[in-house]
Image 1 (tube, rainbow, N blue to C red):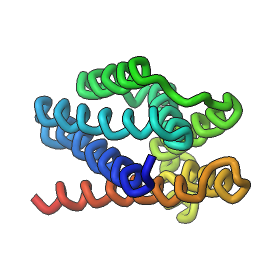
Image 2: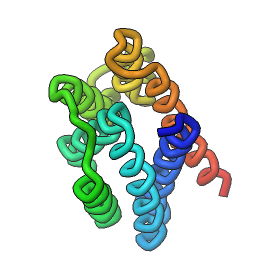
Image 3: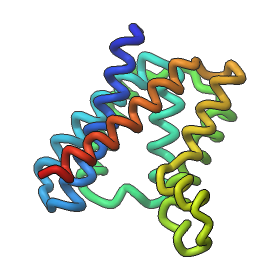
Image 4: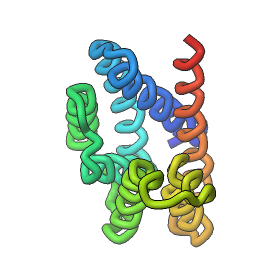
Length: 174
């Protein structure tokens, strides 16, 4: 897949993921949460079926969030179903289970750490590390440095994270 298109899919996925979450959690607008969730599922699903590295990232995030019990609304369920349907209909690339497990554990660590860090320490570094979910960023960076993932995957993941933060800024502006 063209890197420009793949990068755009990561950006759209992060942006719509945040819009969906906040439409439901902050604004109590189920309709918008579902629409943004569907758009997120389309972007991440298309990236997943066309790029093996994206499959590790997005399937890792999905399973990590499932294990952390973060699928907590109908908008998440609809997003999940659409993502799974895209993967089932189009097929996913062959995945190395060890790499997938490492990515799942990184996503799970980010989610659990984000929720619990304030309860277990006053260490400012650790608080910032988990507040901004750096486990998966570090994991993807290390896998890219070792040649397991493309360095572009790390760049695209950072773009995903930045677009998630931009969506948050856009919502806070209103």
